[in-house]
Length: 109
Image 1: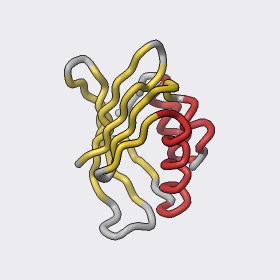
Image 2: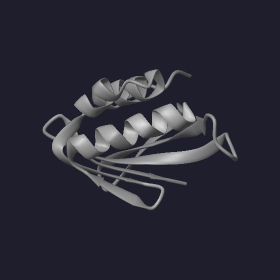
Image 3: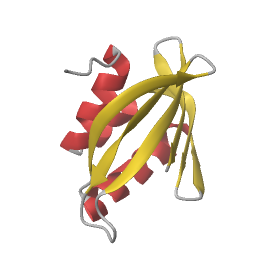
Image 4: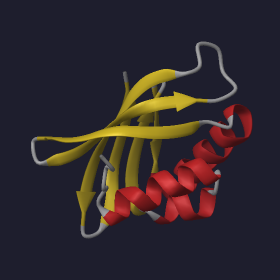
């Protein structure tokens, strides 16, 4: 079975796996918030910097294995592999969407 993601989330995952900070950041609203590894990043410039650093340091690839919803918002489940201790690990990407953009992303086990 092939998993079909909503177009915006498919774009985000594709940009993530291509390590393309411009395409990744384009998926987000100007005032979006990302929560990852105990840190919070506010706004596109901070999200771009965070993603650029993560991509460069870990070369992580997200293999999406599931799509569900919590409170009407999409949650991507999958495995992240890359150049980091403990790779691969299972993570979930909790998203908040509004007006065709990601307004919130929380990455958690």
